[in-house]
Image 1: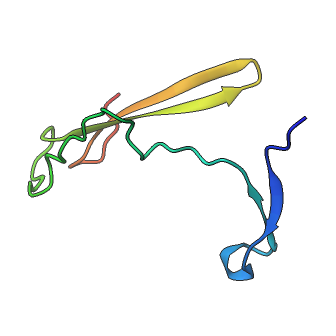
Image 2: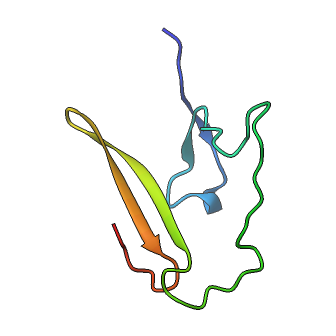
Length: 84
């Protein structure tokens, strides 16, 4: 059986009291695949001055005892209120 992780020493300043950290393959979520288009950030020079001008959404995967569930949120950037 292959070992997927191992312990490697790290500088003490980078930890919270321990001198070891797990080493394993990290997700590569910020690296686009070949042929994928990179879209521009459309809110770069825009000031958000009123409610309902900009909404944001996020999704989170939550493992459960039997399976998993997704937590989704839609939020207004100006008021920082959760809409859904």
